[in-house]
Image (cartoon, rainbow, N blue to C red; front, side, top):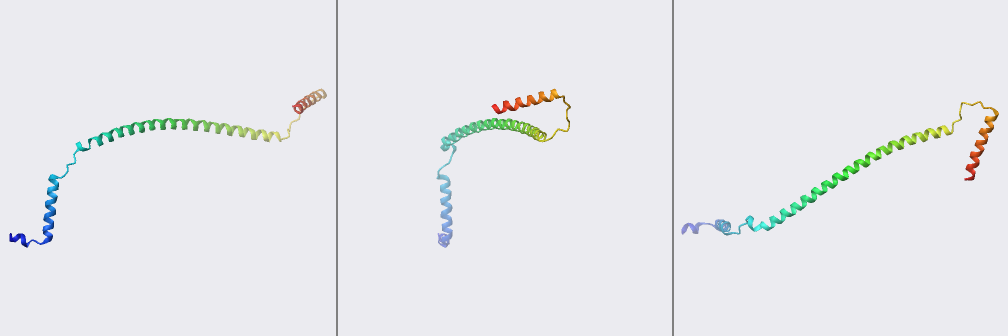
Amino acid sequence: METLKKIDPKTWVIIILGLALVISFFFGQRNTIDTHKDDIDKLHSDNALLIKRNDSLFTENAKLDKQIQEINIELSANNEELADTQSELDKLKKKSHEIPTTIRNMSATSVSNSFTDYLKRTKSKNNN
């Protein structure tokens, strides 16, 4: 008993806390898988649903990526065609302002026929 009287208060606190820890370890609440089985099952079902949604999103993304690639191919083809058309227009604009260097020799009849055709064309444009 005398040894118990010689123990200082700090040591008593440590001994009491140690005993409390051992008692709580043996008699405390047990966390087993069975107590959380419903939560685990719900999480598994939620996970399965999310995986299914994720797979469908991957499928939709793949479809959209394919459509984007097709549209990009069409755009590049249209841009090439537009560039060709623009270069043709530029050539035609240059030619429209040029004065031809070659002169065709015509007889008087040819000149009158060409002039008549020109007047018919301009007259039909003015009537429209």
